[in-house]
Image (tube, rainbow, N blue to C red; front, side):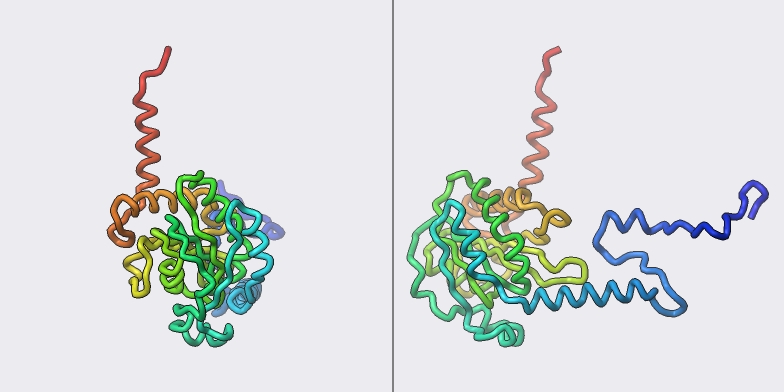
Length: 267
């Protein structure tokens, strides 16, 4: 300690340099240590986050509440289907059963341009919290440009179940909105999987994914909807989705800004 730097008073704790960084991320950073272990507070926080993630996986989807929320939008009444996984436990142990439909005979052959599937996935809570808000944002973004098949709510569902549903509906492009695998930072995140010309047997490389949708900390509904709409436009022009289709929504937005700045302004 130099003469020009007086020692801090004993009753004033040393400032934590990680405090400001923690405010900008949900990641577990700067945990500190107590001897050879983590501080007790950090251990308890980890155990709490782990419990929340486990609960999110096992909590059943409130189908009636979601049906009511979707029914309030400008869409046909939703239709409820399930996979061949008979229980949540079987769904978690047998991913293959979650990809196959139990019965789709109640689905109409809509011949619509867009199909929307709301799947519980590994976080039914995410669908409960954000499903209605995201679908509403999608409808605002579509602004009547597309014909939309009756929405489908799918339980004990994996992403590939949507291929069977999309084929049964006869839609050109399918959007699967699904609860993502919970983590220790986020237990209620949604993902959107877009497949053009859906049919059984489609590979993951045939899809485009938008993830981490959970405002206010994650992606906002309007941003996710804008990206989804841009991908749909691109898929319809290209005739396919997946690795051949890139999200150009941000590039187009920047180009519009550059064009606006390049215009002559009145003095």
